[in-house]
Length: 27
Image (cartoon, rainbow, N blue to C red):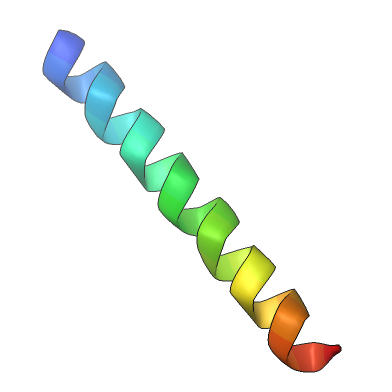
C-alpha cells in the first residue's frame, strides 16, 4: 500500500512536471 501510494505520488509529480514543461515551451 505504501509503495503504491508513493508510486502514485511520483506519477502525479511527473505529469505535473510534463504539463509545466509543455506550457513553458508553448509560451
